Amino acid sequence: MRLAIPLSRDPASSLAAISGALRIWEEYRIEGFIILKTRHTPESLVNKLKKDLETLKLPMEEKLMPSIVDYGDGQTLIRDVERLISSLDDRVGILVSSAGRSAAAALTAASIRHSSEDGNTAFHVNFFFGPWRGLHYPYTPRGTQRVIVLHDPGWLRDERRERPENAASLQRFKLHYSKQNECLREDRTETGLPLLRCTVAEMTRRLNEAAAWGGEPGSHIPVSVVARKGSIKRRHKLIPVNPIEILGLSDSLHSFLFEVAERLEHTEPGGTAFKSSLAWTGLSRLHTRQDNRETDLHSFLSSTYKRIIVDTNLVFYGIHFYAWETGRIELPQCVEREITSKWAEIIKRGKLSSPDRLVRALAVLGLEDLLYSSQSVAPSPPGGCDTAIPMMDLQLLNGNYIATSDDGAYRYWKRHPASRVAKPVKVSFDPRKPPSKMYDKGEPVELARLYYASVQTLLVLDLMRENGLIDDLEIKAGDVVVRPPTKALETGLGLS
Image (cartoon, rainbow, N blue to C red):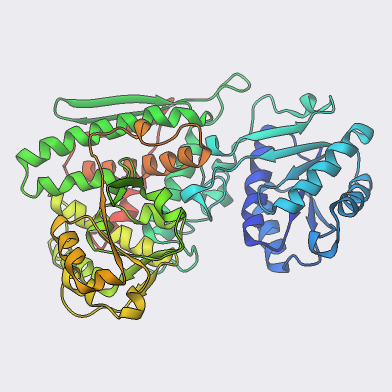
């Protein structure tokens, strides 16, 4: 079977194409690829897709596909897409992309209608998006990229691999985002990814590689996570292909991190600040409160066209986790000044040996994520953000929100004259509430968020293990140990 891959002019279609092609290749025997491009598809996207597929060492050809922008009605488009499909060989699998709704609808209708005549089949590879937007498989969890057969003409079962392949283990993809230890380099321009994002992607690839299929068709090796600090211990298993199982792992990680935070609060200098890590990872969800009404921050950001000017404390609370899904977050310069100036003092000591230093390291990682995710930086007066934010240029404040988690700053802002043009918003989180009580398991994007939060948490726990703040962290898939790219984080932070 050859696989036909549509590619539109949207860069997102390239990510959907490579993810879909790799996931179908893992589960079915593919003999070659047909790239379906429109006359509007940039050659740069075609070349990128071909370069990504080269690692599979399979023949490729290009064909011109009708574009929705050239047609006045859908029926004519479907007719011409049908003609294209009829010109293909028998036993062609057609990938219906999750990017480009109009083209996907036409391709689905045409391919399924035509499949009954010549035996072609159609696939869709689901993608939950959320904070994974902009990444592609194998840097996204296998469980969020499920292969769905839209039409099975009967012969497809013979093309299913008895023992599926594993794209995450291929050398090309092993190095794709971390070529020559790219996450370790100070200049990561080749990847275009900030340090934290790069290590989240690489950790996900390592989990995908280790948690491959087992001996029986369709069976998977579970991922086992064991974390321990003194008498506090959690053990949990995750079947990576089933997205709903992320609820159990995220609850287990949250429970462990919360108990550790409670202990550090009473035993370590600066331990009180460590509870913010529950929010920073995304396991504890941020909420806004205004006019006695509470809304989770994802919903709040998606429901407004206004920009949110954030205080420094929200970087410690993990506002970067929300930034990959919105462009409405505004960073005042005072935030950058406060975080980087305090971090310079910690680098001189060279180790994250206290909870307070670890929390500051996480803030630096979050700040870099924010700067890379197209969030804008706004000029602000000298001084701390508590006083600087309401004194920003009125044109920047006008009609927007100013957000903080600090009670004192919130009260001050509500009484400040600037509150007449920029509405103060109080942001908080409940560290005791488990993720399964805050995220809707019926919404795919919510499960995608929990996957991302869980991977961030594994990185945090391994940083803690490296610096003696917990005793042990073991991540295994069967007998294979999965090691987080923690050294890359420490090197990028200037600690080694």
